[in-house]
Length: 456
Image 1 (cartoon, rainbow, N blue to C red):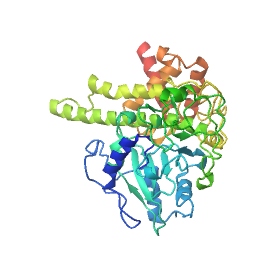
Image 2 (image 1 turned 90 degrees about the vertical axis):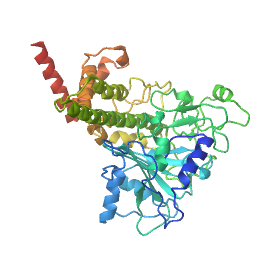
Image 3 (image 1 turned 180 degrees about the horizontal axis):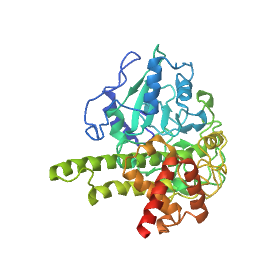
Image 4 (image 1 turned 180 degrees about the vertical axis):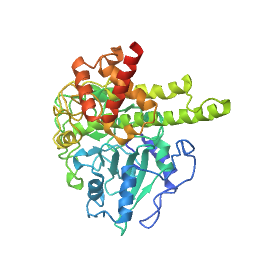
């Protein structure tokens, strides 16, 4: 399982016990046992166990089955490079985590970190000398879907879905209660375990930079930025002593590990910043999707029982999906983003490749353009608004989101929650979305029409 989460060693041990009965031995055995044990959201209307999936890994498996694509095996990196190419994931997205995590945790240590690669809707993990590639692939309707692939060379490599194994850790408060992903920052011992009696931090765009990246390597140009990356907690030291003496850790992997065992020699700071934003953005999209479907499903049953017209939605049901939808709007617009206290820059080529993707408006502006001086992006609105998962948010939640975005970006909503957005930011984002996001343009037109009707 691709457990982006950095867990303490007791949690890992329990996790491995849960997982051990599900993992086959050797390349000829099935890697996972399916459809056993309790699985959240397995029932209607979510039907999480459904095989009707359209996530990137499921689509790639269909191409493999048809013979449209083949995966090539390399002696050092196995299927990794070929899989990344087939999923359109750049090696420049590589981030390296040396805290022990995932079911393959015995092979993870500071000298042999686990590598994580990602794009907008799929995450790929590889453990040095491990037995399985690990995947989290986002389906537009179902959210995070978990897969593994045997690292051994076989005639027909295949992705296998892992349900119970990964859900044990990946439906939690840190994923907002839905199948999702999360990042943690921990104080790490030289053995790679979390130091006893030390805190752990969930990392998102709102996290203070000084608390991020414990247990991760961070390369690039961080300036004088203080963070927990690259460092180990000495024996006997406390978290307070470590934090007070932290400072800018050397952003260089020289002498720390053999980088030839990895696709690149980087664990880029810009890739880390984007990853922190993206994981919780994915979870909020899934949460809004699930809560809307759950609310409408319950309302349909209630309406039939009470003899109410189909499509009737109570105030309580509206609150059920409008609450996460409002959270999504605020996160989407980076209203809670922790400021960068120092300008930063990457050196792996990730920033350039990332910015080159995605639509641009007639003025050449893109939501993927970076700032990296005081904040991550030049235009603070998430690029995941273009994702299939965002488009799959059911009505009426999606209409609510479009309406709220228009109210904020047009300047009609000047509430304190959106005070970090300047008038210039709002105008630029609105113009970019009107030019590049047809669904938003249509939603905004509906809002304008409704307002004109109500004022006549």
